[in-house]
Amino acid sequence: MNVEPDCDALRAMARLLRADIIRMLGAAGSGHPGGSLSAIDMVAYLYFHRMRINPNEPLWSGRDRFVLSKGHCAPAWYVALAHRGYFPRELLWTLRDIESPLQGHPDMRKAMGVDMTTGSLGQGFSAAAGITLGLKTQASDARVYAMLSDGELQEGIVWEAAMAAAHFRLDNLIALVDDNKLQTDGRTADIMSPNPIAAKWRAFGWDVWEIDGHDLMAIHEAVERCQTRQGKPHVIVADTVKGKGVPSMEDQVDWHSLARPLEPAQVDAFLAELDGAKP
Amino acid sequence: MTAEPNRAAYGKTLVELGRRDPRVIVFEADIAKSTNTWRFAERFPERFFNCGAAELNMVCMAAGAATTGLVPFASTFVVFASMRAVEGIRQSICYPRLNVKIIATNAGVEICGDGPSHQGVEDLAIMRAMPNLTVLSPSDPVTTRLATIAAWEMEGPVYMRLGRQPATVLHNGLTGFRIGEMIRLREGGDVTLIATGNMVEQALLAADDLASTGLNARVLDCHTIKPIDREAIIAAAAETGCIVTAEDHNVIGGLGAAVCEVVAEEKPVIVERVGLMDRFASSGRDYRKLLEHYGLHAGAIASRARRAVEKTDKRN
Figure (cartoon, one colour):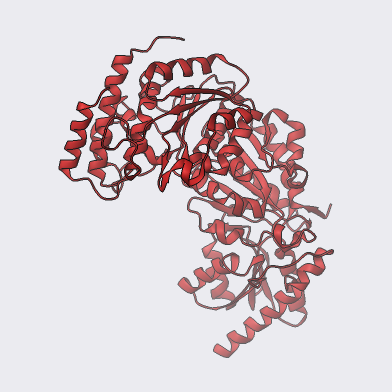
């Protein structure tokens, strides 16, 4: 299945999702804008072009799975699920509220469309390997997409799972590393360098692709190539910009997470920046 | 057969379940020979996944596999399951209530030669604090088999601890095993001995000793640490006036603590707790001598029972 994506439509969708990320974080008063914005082009591509899913039957056993191992960027997942029809868009404004299905980190028992509960870095990736193993054991051809961050690669379990996925030849597993180069305390390379990222995955026996994580056609081509190669799990190392799309947030560690609630005027200013930004 | 390690009974039951249910898969972390998952591996190699010495990854992979409708059993030693892998058990299994069965072997001081680094004596305290988790600790091969089957039958996360050494059959012919219900092994009105795992046999021996000096002890096999059988504890307090708990575990946080919590809330009576006295034990060449050295034996249970009865008499 190599249907060319409509990149203009996907770009427009990504812009819509970015705006809703900012609105929902404005409503919640806390959360992680930077990594949500760096990941959203890949999330938009998967949910609006690639994944074999049916929002009317969210637990269909033959569906492709998505696991947001960098669970703190839940807003990026929630906006995609809402716009894809898993739940009403209005629910986005309840983010992080008591009894909201949209918990601060994804909860599979509360939010429709969430394939795995995540939040503790590295565990979602390991669970994604387990999901792939479970599907393969049952002769399913469904794909599993797992998104990690560059900072997350510091967790030992990532490499335990990377070793296992290659060992068990989980070629239905596609990892996407959102390499936005910043983490809570500063630049990832300064805190604890995970570099060189691609070489590490290659050494662990993975099929590795390096792309610009904001170029929708590049994302498409990489995922497409992953579908055709057998015998190894795949990883797409995506060069991204933290806060992408909102120039005053871009590449700023201070926008990893909100230090204080956004003022309504700030939300408006960020939305205006989004409209003014180059697509 | 009168004795067999509980881990062997577990391994055999896994094969039984593998035959009955194609959804059963087994994860292991390089100690299949010891945990006895090798029995399943031999019979169902396509449903057996050895993750190597990577316990955290093993439990999280098991969690992922459970989301696809499979029923994963994951085994390693108690120390590694309850401490190295515990955050995965919390975040990826208990919190999302996934149907994973963690079966950990080599519980307690009993394992002997390998020493404190391999003696899991904190797991009951740790696992008891996990919401959504059922915590099992059977005493003999019969209840180990029944507990394994009960874990498979129920939907949801289960943690079970099993010993390494041969366990005497105490429940020959038992059929009515239910999670959360203690089994009454001996009737008695002067004191109740509530024990778990390998200490159940010691409690029975202690009851014999006590009977020879005129004290009649009720003996309860507490194979489920969570949910704890509140009714059995309240009845013991009301009907026998005092309680002794016994576990091959740190005296903090395990069975003794669970019993004290219920007693304090519902029916305050004297409770004496037999367990490892908040210290690390040591290696030993003979596990019976080692247990005795750390006060985990029938003699200690009997003397604590006498003390409990004395304290109770003084109060009244």
